[in-house]
Image (cartoon, rainbow, N blue to C red; front, side, top):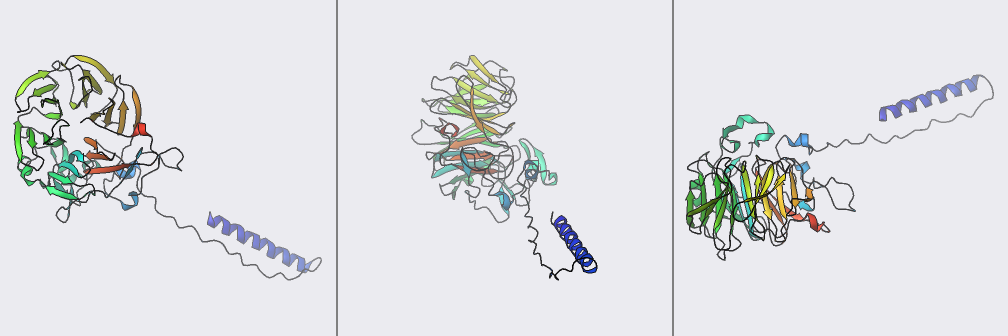
Length: 405
């Protein structure tokens, strides 16, 4: 653009000079006009466009230019593409005290008991130069159950506790012994809403001997361990203390029922009725909702395990949570969106998009909200937890509130 303007200016100057010479030699003399210095503005500085697009995100590495990529989404705001929906992401909320040169590895589970007590369940820590598998730097990785993870992963900081400022206040080193090999896949962390003592349950969906459910006291003392839990993906609780565990099986009954002491007391659902079941939730009537990663659907069973309904075309239900007013929130790891449904399976709202930089998602394995409305997200494939605050004037229908857990 600027070279074109300079060419035009030079052309105009040449025409003026020719005209003056012609006038001087022929026709009426003209006054000698001094040349006018035309001051052109400097070329604009071309600032680099941050690599915050889907294509740029494939690098799988942090970029400080992308930390501000929190596009507004509310009606009346200027610009934005709405990728964070009704929330504002805080990229630096969690401040881990890992050994120098290390960062988060695979983060499977997250649970906010209160804003001052948030549990994060991870596979361990990795070197700073390691890149999430989808970033394409495969030389750092070895293939293990659960996906590509760094060969040099240190299986430490498996279970940590955080306060509302994002500070790490406890490290449960006693948990590491159960997760010290590639067969372990730290998956979910739960606290029963009916338990006054707030025991902490963790689910490892690995292969033997790592297929296990372990119960701890609130301060980290082991109470019970259910080994050989058949690749449990998720658990939910009944008021009497019984546990419903959903399996990833495609041949057996999808639900195992345990009593409060960890003894199996029954199996529910027709054999082979689910495909890669990955989450479980109850409504007020006791109906059971199971989201499937492999079946592309959410299935509804009555309290006895009898099939009741199917919600199709929910492609990869990675996690689901029922609210106190009986709305089911699902994270779909195909569209990378949070999806909200009523109990008839009607889609009510959705938000979210794919990517690596803060506020975008890749494979959300668990999400939770605290009493202040903040949203916590565990991303095993992006190797991180994320923290979001509701935006001012956000649409209440898009906010995840009051999960039953």
